[in-house]
Amino acid sequence: MKHATPQVLIIGAGLAGLACARHLTNAGLACTVLEASDGIGGRVRTDRAEGFQLDRGFQVFLTGYPEARKALNYATLNLMPFYPGALIRYAGRFHVMSDLLRRPQDLLQTLVSPIGSLTDKLRMLQVRRDALRQHLCSEMTDPARPTREVLRDYQFSDAMITRFFKPFLSGVFLEAELSTPCWIFELVWAAFCRGATAVPRDGMGAIAQQLASSLPPGTVRLNHAVQKIQESSVLLESGERLTTHALVIATDDVTASRLQGKHVPGTSARGSMTLYFDAPVAPQRGPWLMLNGEGDGVVRTVCVLSEAAPSYAPPGRALISVTTTDQIEAHSDGPQAVRLFLQSWFGSQVNGWRHLRTDHIHHALPPIDLLSPGNRTASPRVTAGLYLCGDYRESGTLDGALLSGRKSAEAVLTDCDLL
Image: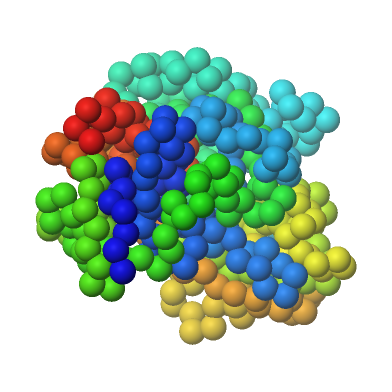
């Protein structure tokens, strides 16, 4: 069966590939997106089972991301916000740590909590100000410096770093040493401060669905895995060959290297493990993110997603998301290990939780060593007619994926006289 040759081929229907396709089609260029799996979104997908919405691994959306604000229609996503802050489990109870500019009602609880000193909490306002003004990295002189050094330079106490920053940021960056570069910390922290932390009513997968909704019918071809690329053509695993004048590889870094015939790097990507539970009642009311501030155990964070977005669970049920630490790997029964640990948080009710699914995402975020501040100025153009995009080309975030997709489309459009 013969197909009309598309002007642009995009490999990968994740957020970067979809963003690229939307920019190109809006500019009048025909393109085809080849997706190996049975659905769009890449890592940002939502499955539905037994009335529950299960994102692929625990994910949240930061409305303060700059590219997302331009690329997405927030109103149609029906974003459901969490409280701006967290409940931190320390010394046998939960302690409130809130953004006091947005939840002034938590002032007393936040100030008297043992999660850092009063001075630490005043320094939080300084970090907020510097991140929003994009002065945080300039103050540090080196945008590649690890986040842990930035926090030390701001003179946060060991208690504040151990009980708040480490559990919070390890859940964001999926690494426990706080080695994420300063420039990424600044971008993400500013997004937290600038907007809400939320989930779409229909799950995180709704973001990909919105991007794809404006594409012409037939633009995305699912179950079309690419075996290899050869100059101006791609060979599909089905044996079909497609030729093009412009090819955009919008995959993860490992797949992009393989398709280009380069050495595939070792597995240094950051992974995550999320366990979903069905419960008759929420163990904690309110849309809170709960952090393990004790520094040990198998649990990193707990979130009752249905408290933020009731659409995530059927009526009368609660959907609980638990992200785990590396210690979970020592247990043969992960769900039971989580229940045993959380008995000290919520009591015997955890024994009645029904395990729904475990998502072990091996490549949840790209390797840190790929996230150079120079990525922001690097061209997506590899050679004439070949372009790259993906979160690893920017900040390793959802916003970075959207930005990278736009940049690759702009590069294609600049070179469109070649098409």
